Image (cartoon, rainbow, N blue to C red; front, side, top):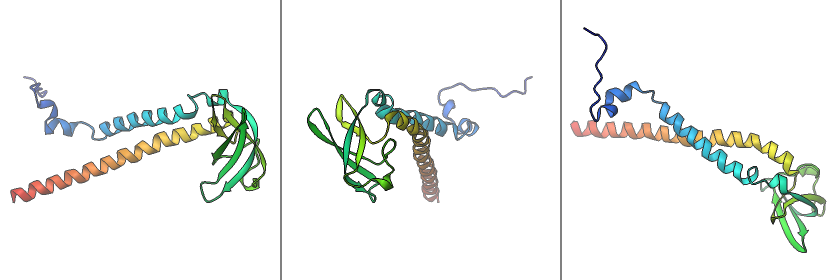
Length: 172
């Protein structure tokens, strides 16, 4: 006679309360988080890195038209490509341009633009910027889904407590 428990594989057993207690409660949440990390990382990476902006970028001179220290430290600069004037608004100004604190309206800066879409431009070297954005990608891809999954997890626990309270009140 075997002391091992017999398994019942009838329909509905897979979702019985006994089976769900045996499964680790965090496993579905980790899977959801990993799926969201993949989606967020893909979306962010596609905007600059996968788009090949750094490989195609051309440089031209520009003139600072505005400096907005209270609006995410944005520097606005106007530049010209093929006889058309464009404006870039960038919150990250980097080499070869001077630091944000040293920039003044009228200062000459270097703009890197996409020749396929000249209105898309940045105020720092795209190759260096792309490598710095990797840290942001990792952080955003890990933190944003964690907040989302954590919120779902908390609201799910609150919802279960609410349902239990309603069921208890009905039985009383």
